[in-house]
Length: 370
Image 1 (cartoon, one colour):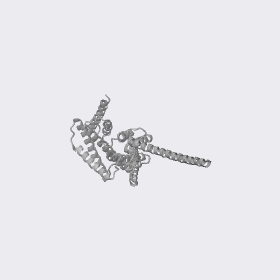
Image 2: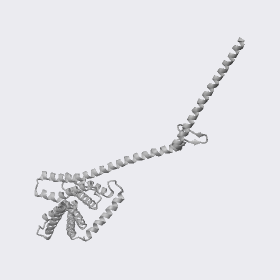
Image 3: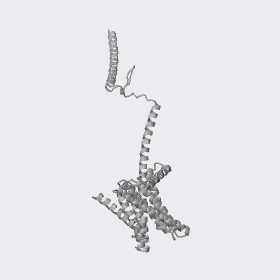
Image 4: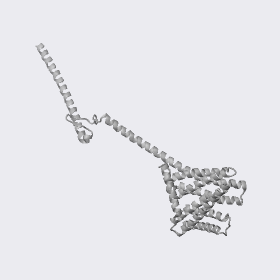
């Protein structure tokens, strides 16, 4: 009996252990099922919340957005990266080249302005050197008023035009060419003299260099867009326009007087050229005659520029006011040092023209002021 009781008790314990193991297995299965349900539910909820941008739905069911990556080929990624790098490189190059171009243009502008100012200072140094060495005499005043005032004034006008980006105007192109002719002929005059005059050589040399630069920038711009062909074409058209304007009668009465003044200086140039030719034939010195011709070349182009401005009603501009005063000095010198005196028709004409230029310059200045 005791043995049976012990066997029954053992059977109950074994059954109890098996039930306990079965319960534990069922509990683990339930927990696993609940976990899987929770994961599935959260995945579906995210799919409906964020849309297809964050989850890829396939036949097998939703995939967690954490593990989803867009299917982009390696070649496509490389092409995209290459385009991005090229774009950034182009932007950097463009910005850098633009900055360098701007800096180069500003440098050219500053240099051409300084060149014109150096021209004016060089001619002023010539006057100072002459005054120190020979004193302020009548000859010095003649030399200063007749040969230095106009170059100094034109150099200052061109410097102002360069600072305001106006060298591309026909007026300043014409001035540059006039000053270039003055510098070249001046070097010839110095070479023909009894001794080399260093201050004059420096002044004329600076004139040749800077007027070529100024004319080039006026035609091609500070960016130098163009080339020799553009310069040649501009020289042809400018020369044609100058000759056409010289022989064309103006439409304004005031411009007629400027035309007469231009013609009178041109006649003086022809006379001076004839004297030079005769001196060459006879073997006489021509330095003094060439210097006077040089001054007349500059004066005639200034007078023509004023005639053109008067025909266009532009005498009120500051440049033309200055040109009126400078030209008045040149015509006054012609009248004072005329071999026939002021009583001759030529001398009287030069006095009248000098007074006319001075009056127009003063009238234009007063109109601008008031």
